[in-house]
Length: 131
Length: 346
Image (cartoon, rainbow over all chains, first blue to last red):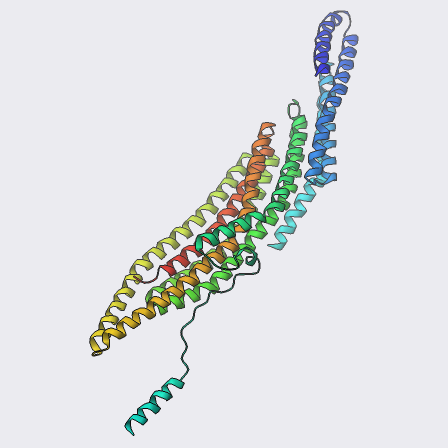
């Protein structure tokens, strides 16, 4: 919880610094933004650790297929990275690149979801075959 | 000489084998036997014994259902991490999450659908054995018209209902589920409307069949029951009037025979009711547990704000509800039939 308040304070300071640095040169402000974003990502990942551990516990209790939960972990990771990278690009004035990254993220997630889709289709086919 | 002749005739008559009519209820299927009490006491106690034993067998099922629900919550939690992001990644992640949840749920629902179909088949088969016995017992009690009408109605409705469920309603449940998965994966509203229409059609089909059946049972019970009562009364009056001296005794004796037949019929009916309950209750409770668990899980998942995934879980709980309705309809149908036969003449 302490880290959260520190990050919020850090982000607010970065905003003020960004505004000041923006007048001098955009590059430094952008670099500062990127650094803080990375910091947020790292802290976010640390905060997510107990959540992921809890999800793993649920998975173990529920005897959920490890491949399936693995795909979902990858999906979430790729989604988070892609979204944040896209937003940084947009902040840097490279919205086309940002959109490109977001598009690539969606495609990657869909690609990851193919085994899930195949599994569901196969299951439906086997059920239909038995009817 | 004359006395000796009479004695010989009497002795000859005594040597002729005479058996009373006997009606025994068909044995309950193997799956239901562990639930039935070893010795019958009162109907209420026996029914309570069946319910208690059925609840006792639920434990592994509850654990399995809880496991599935926890898995679903885990999936929804994972997707919800991405849900507040402004880009399209959350949509794609929800798509993947929906497919994963569908995979988990389909296994569970498929086993429930199979169990429900098997139960319906068992109930129908048991009904096919029980109803003829009840018909015979009712006819022996004097309800010849009533038993024939009830048997015809029950046989036809049993055939219609089991065929309808096996050939139309169960495939409709699969279509409902397929539409629910497609709707949750794509978010297409038209598919949701189609899914709701399938559900409405399914419920409507079941309701119509049961309405017609209860209506038929009511009408045949009143009309043929009164006709049989009138016939019995006329027969008794004829016997007591036509046969001099012992006419009244014969009429009373016939009354005793009819009452005995009625008692036998009721004993068969009570065993039949218990057997039907024993066949039906365990699968019904198992599906009920799944239904409740999915409803609760759907509610919990809504907290995370992943609407499409929680909608999918709710849709699967609706499918469980439909299975409950189908299994319950067949059971109620058989219970009503048996009670109508037990009601007897008049």
